Length: 135
Length: 135
DNA sequence: CTACATACGTAATAACGTAACGCCGGGACG
DNA sequence: CGTCCCGGCGTTACGTTATTACGTATGTAG
Ligand SMILES: [Zn+2]
Ligand SMILES: [Zn+2]
Ligand SMILES: [Zn+2]
Ligand SMILES: [Zn+2]
Image (cartoon, rainbow over all chains, first blue to last red; front, side, top):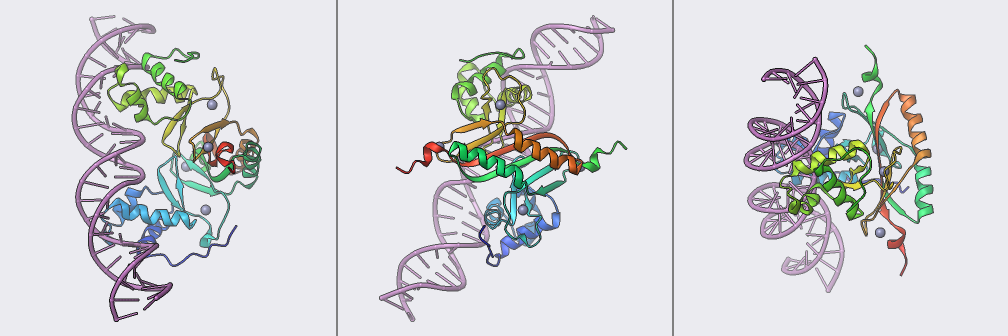
């Protein structure tokens, strides 16, 4: 993986990334917009443009099954491989992990099919340990 | 049109499933709606309600990264485990496969975390063999 | 008959996402 | 210096995806 030291964030990118980091969990683009109205945000595009860059930089991940975005849980966001997410349907907590062995098997399949892989989405839905306790 | 096996489908469910089967690939809910206007469909909810049931029956899968739906490629739709999808970004072809070994590793992770798994989304984006030919 | 469950039809609205326009500031380069 | 280009930005308007709310019809159990 190339070591992507990435340029200073623009003001809007920093605001959006700050919102996601502070939230400590997933936010939709429109939720971010609402959080940033006091900072001058007025339209969805301002959020989506910043999110596009942050995703490109690997600092933010998109959760396809939620139509939401979450700050990468890796400190400093040094580049990492494919991320996977466990999403609790009770409490909404999202845990990011790196499914290296599973990815290796998926890549075996893509190679055998001649499929050139560019991006992988792995999202597990269920109930986290906290929400599982019988009470 | 298409096969009907499995639970007795209602008229609307059969129409939606037929559209997806005939398409041989993913369709959005609104694309299905347009296809079925001549059959009397007038509103998105008619499509979404049918899709909900078809997904519940395992006859249709939702592609989260496309906001689209696809008929299960297992003819007869005998029950199967978690499905995974390779989506060609050039030609749009979607290949369904069963990532049993990768799922087993993902389940190892969920067990170790006490996460109770209910649904899994695995979607690979890239370029299929056809679209990869040097030419 | 009543109560409940399931499917359905329709209208309206919410939630998510993008196209198109123009403006501005900074860097390349003649 | 002037001019060109380009990335980021702000705004309007629009397109796409999904749900809420309400009412109807039908079948079945008690
Ligand atoms: Zn990450
Ligand atoms: Zn939880
Ligand atoms: Zn399937
Ligand atoms: Zn292709």
